[in-house]
Image 1 (cartoon, one colour):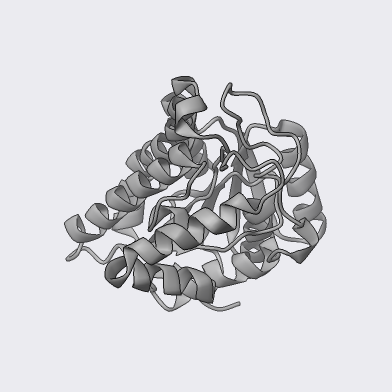
Image 2: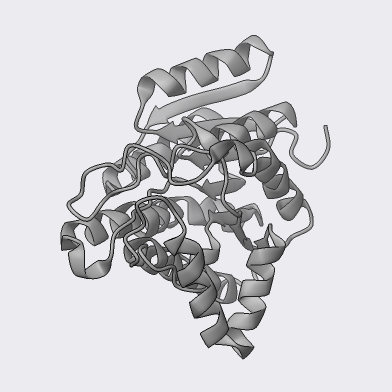
Length: 271
């Protein structure tokens, strides 16, 4: 089965989208997968499906914005499987509203899930990851490399995630810990449907043509490939790579390009 056979993998946000696809991909490669999310119904269905295929999987209902939930997630994983080799910090939410029209509770929520969720899970899994010279992964976005208009809380949380993970990489430089930040492009998941508006309510519809977007399965395969090749930062789209490049040399051009792109969305908050 190769590199991932019998590896213990924790995946947050595993009930749908990239997280679910990653759980299926790791399980198919022989890993012991612990799935975490808030929806017990979806987690139970996913784990049952994997077990029917003869694959090893379990779940723990987890709200990553709650530190105790993250601690229990790691403890139950170690109790069942003995250790942790790979942690995929995938759970996340988005938003769409101008900062001037956004209740600050929205930014708190984005930081609680996207940033603090990563911090909490990593804190409790880190001793096992270091002991195993394992992999710590953050599923991020180009929004973590350059600010996206109308997504202040999302960009801020991803920038914070990047700073946290990059620092951990340096702190553990001589301990063999692999740290990877992976930035997919727009992917066909429910994240835009559940994105928060300025008052904290869910957007309810996607401003993108979901059938034209990248598949979660494509991203999941790249997560495994990135771990296999010990990648540091992996940006999956050429647009994203160009953004990261031009952000350093022509930032004003990137500002205008992002403004124009986001302004084209239906009911865009940008005028």
